[in-house]
Image (cartoon, rainbow, N blue to C red; front, side):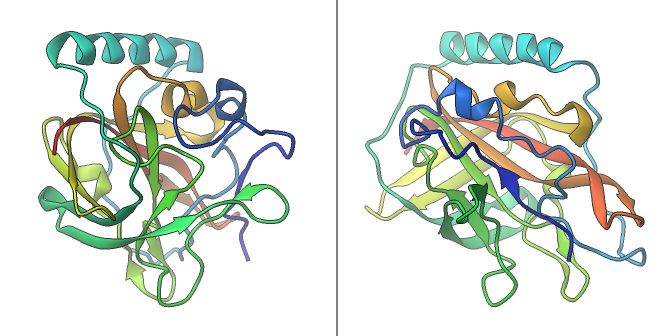
Length: 232
């Protein structure tokens, strides 16, 4: 079975709710690990955003610009901690319960396992809760060989300005607006840009994309949606 994990350093202690520590972000790599996309050559083509090219350093500069623009254009809004329960993305028809995943015994980030929750979105519980200061991380499968399209099959169709809502366990609803939708090669994934510390309440939604490599059973790229909290 293909490896769908994301490796996290076993010595990392600071990757907890709040801000994700940069040292953890630096090694939360999707590269070459075939995250959340296991399929067959017969699989239908998934929607793709434009490819983001260039080094992680160049992309990090874009991230600084995005963060500055957000804090200048909008008041800084944050919410108290409350775990997420339901994800809604009207633009692509997503309405999903949210499971909470952590790390495996080997230190890898868990991904939705085969079974009844395979096609639901997941929150990485060592990231901030959606609405807290920092980058909350949601992930999910794009498809599977047995079930076809999964929860984030249409993620690449999302556009800047689309609305994302996360219902939380305290019954509050965190409302996010999409800032960017990017596609990155797993061999040049801008880890710090996606997972690094930010000065606002952000959301990162991640799945697989790009071409499907039949020889490895993995997609070659990742699709990442960047969004920021605008209210509740």
